[in-house]
Length: 185
Image (cartoon, rainbow, N blue to C red):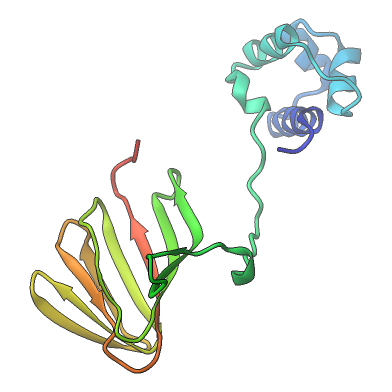
């Protein structure tokens, strides 16, 4: 988390400007002096919990509005920075590029299966969306084989019994998006 003082300052300025309020108007609404509000907005003073509650109540927002960090507009992730999750023989590797996020309700992985690997997945909530990056992959859904090659895609519900098989001579690599329509918790 960034410096809490800077986060509070940024959120107060943003809220005030979005509502087209002056410092005088915010002071009237909150009972916090204009001078104190100015110091908070400049990041020169960290408000007490009591002061922050007064500001939140006066502006009719939740206390946590001032503590929330902006999401970055761009997020770059390098493969070499990701620690893969593997099976015991390291034939099946999962790279969690975007772990589950309750706001978006999905997670994105790159999965690599070495030649000859058979991975029987556990059934789970949500839906799987697979896009083959390179190689060939067989996905078995309730006993039915689905042969996929580079560029092919497949979608199915996670509650369907499924397994992944790489019977080729090269590593099969695919993008896996798992979507959870219901909140996880």
